Amino acid sequence: MKGFPIIAVLLGGLLLAGCSTVPAPTYKPPIANTESLLKHQGDKLDVGQVVAESGVPNTRLAVRASA
Image (cartoon, rainbow, N blue to C red; front, side):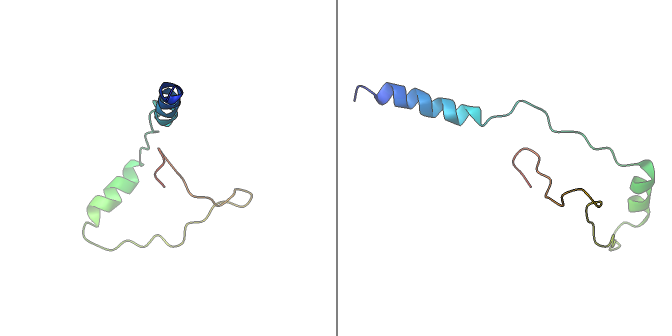
């Protein structure tokens, strides 16, 4: 039982270490994209397959632990 406070502090520190204070980047769509979406409200838009450029690893984008 002597080591319980030390273990509790270490576990608390590990839990707090996962918190992030860095803000997520803000993405601004071009005005043309916004106007196109407003013009075709309710329509199904098909953009085709989206892949990474050659030489860039095709990985998922994660922001704040959300893919």
